Length: 129
Image 1 (cartoon, helix red, strand yellow):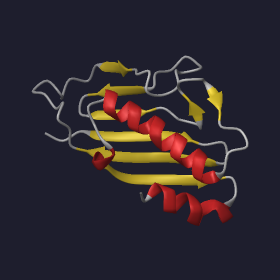
Image 2: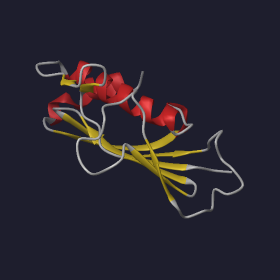
Image 3: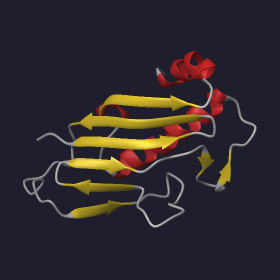
Image 4: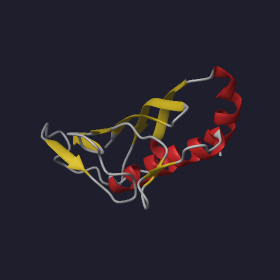
C-alpha cells in the first residue's frame, strides 16, 4: 500500500512547503478510512496554535509547517546561518515523519520558498545531504 505525505513548513529565512512521500511501513488494511488521525511527537516543536504537527487521512499524511525551533528548548535558531536553519527545519520534519511511520526516504516532492533567493544554493546543498 502507498502512503502520501504532504509537508508545509519553513525556517526563519527559508520556507519548505509541499513535500510528498509515498510508501510506509505503517500502511494497514484500513488505510482507506477517511478519519482524521492527529500525529504528535516531542521530536519536533509542539504546535503553537490550534493545529496538529501532522494529520493522517487514509493513506495521506499532511505535516504542518515547521520553523527553525529547537524542540528541546523551544527557542528559535535566531541569528543562525541558512545552513543551521535548514538543518533545524529538516530535523523537525524528520521527527514528525518518524512519528508517522515514515522516513525522509519516503519524500518524493518538495517545494521551497526562501526569503532571499540568494540562499537557494546553500539551502539546497544542506537539503541534498
